[in-house]
Amino acid sequence: MITLESVRKAYGSRVVFEGITLTLAPGRITALVGPNGSGKTTLIKLILGLARPDAGRLLFDGIPFDAEGRYRARIGYAPQSPRLPEHLRVGELFAMLCALRPDASVDETLLDEFSLRAEWETPVGTLSGGWRQKLANACAFLFAPDVLILDEPTAGLDPIAAGLLKSHLRQARSAGRTILISSHILSELEELADDVAFLCEGHLRFAGPVAALLAETGTRRLEPAVAALLRGLRIETGGAPRAGLRA
Amino acid sequence: MSTRRNTVALVLRAGVRDLTRSRWLVIYTVGFWAVTEALFLFGGTGEQVVLSLLNVMLLLVPLVALVFGTAHVHASREFTELLLAQPLSRRAIFLGLYLGMALPLTAAFVVGIGVPLLLHGTTGAAPRLALVFLAGTGALLTLTFAAIAMFIALGGNDRLRAMARALAIWFAFTVAYDGAVLAAVSLFGDWPLERPMLALMLGNPVDLARLLVLTSLDASALLGYTGALFRRIFGTALGPAIAIVALSLWTLAPVLLARRRFLRRDF
Image (cartoon, rainbow over all chains, first blue to last red; front, top):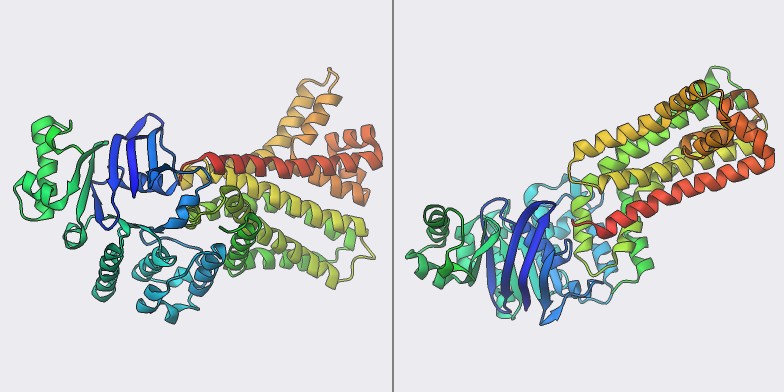
């Protein structure tokens, strides 16, 4: 379980967000949503230790994140269509990742199901966006982590690959893993997500079960629910948090 | 968890594999090879070839290391993030990324000038020491400016701004610095300038590299004002030794600064 307590992050004078308190529970898929620039990627980077919070605490199973980043052995991360060393071959990249973590158990299921072995000798730079996304997703699942953090994981994927990924995410949830997905494709999140964390204008405007959000907004689908949240913010408070919807 | 040495070696190997397949590195190697061959073709002796190569090296090596290095660090940002998301030491990742970029560039330069020089058998015509100093100072300049490139590129996310800074630093060290020194000499000619000039000499790795190679060739006439001063004060034995130490420090300092920035920054 990952917990954020009153987390604040700013770059210079620009406050990305503050007062973020959020729990990512095991056996549940949390959808991280919000408009562009709302701080979704920054939140992910804080959890990964790529950036440091200005205030607040981050805990892994109740223990504060260690400075050495040992907790990252239990996290799998898939960035969105990453640009990786373009002349490195797919096989060399996976071999390097496995060699970097010699003690970790390796789960190559997604490598096989995404047919990445057929591209083993292909330079990463010649892969299409969809193949790069498959590669990123396979990297996230490679060490069978307890926590999966995926940034736009279905971007550019064909329907078959997207279906395979969703199936794996459901299996991971059943196995009790903690999953955080950041995406703009709300219809896909709706299929998978148990919980929603909605970031907007530097604050966490909603955090809770999808069903609670739908009930709160009087809608049946995630997309109009998020739209209602956004409209509500603009009309009712001009950007200030709605008390009933705060986490 | 991977040991630090293992992490450095694996990240370094990935960098070397990536860059040695890059056409830009091949062009860089072939370019130096072609220039060396052309200098022989136009009737140069071993010593003349080394002198001409020195001038090419002093301009080109910092430029390529700065521009290529800055572009490479920005292009590797997502790879860096993928590595940082693993349970690995930031120090080890930094060293692996730095060496993975700087060593292929260094090897490209050394192969580009070294192989044709060896093929032409010039070691008899040109002093062996000059060849060693040419290759060695070129290697140190590559390591220095690759580290400066890394320091610049880690300073922000704006690639164009970083590239502009890299070019400004290249211009400052290779062109403007000597101009500033000359201006200082002409402006303050009535003052005792020996100590400030020596400090200025140590403040530019490009000048130190030039001094080292010219000293090994015994081409005193080409040393320039600061070079001649350096030689007169420290002599032919101590001078090069001081220059080698200073150039080595020039290599180490930007590496430490870039590492500090890498360890502290948010990605």
